[in-house]
Length: 136
Image 1 (cartoon, rainbow, N blue to C red):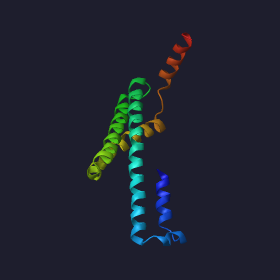
Image 2: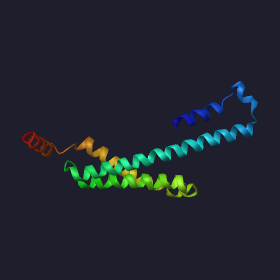
Image 3: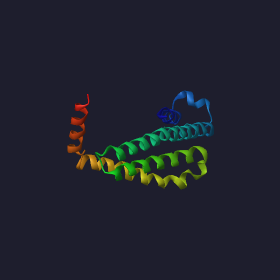
Image 4: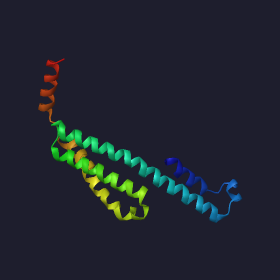
């Protein structure tokens, strides 16, 4: 997907081989490259959205973190999926739906801050590790 950004950059340069094309043709090629990047990034975020849903489920069920963090990460995943599918299937509404990504920011930022400030529930972690040692 980043390759499309480089293509736009190269097409915007002053290399001799670009003189074979008219300026309006170069502009069209740059625009196509940038659109391809947008769609590629949207497809990438579909996979990341599903990953956030899985992370949210695991955080919710683990017992090492507050359940609210799991819910927020699941909401982040849903917002990524909503944004990405809108970009791919109904691009005219993509700009309208884009603010939904604030929910993704909230979920991911909450998890980051929780890990930096509070961390994992160590007593629960140790108790489960001891229990696992008993059964292994």
